[in-house]
Length: 55
Image (cartoon, rainbow, N blue to C red; front, side, top):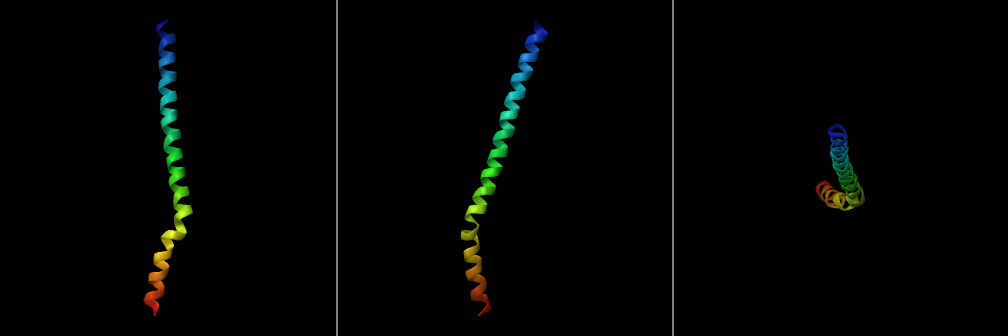
């Protein structure tokens, strides 16, 4: 009986760890997507600064 319950407890702990891993992966993907979407906004000041420096 105790071995059966140990198996259940281990499975629940593994599910919790898997959920944390998926959440971290999703956060990294969202951060990358945000950088890709906002890249033109980040590059615009640099482009303006570089053009001003050349003159």
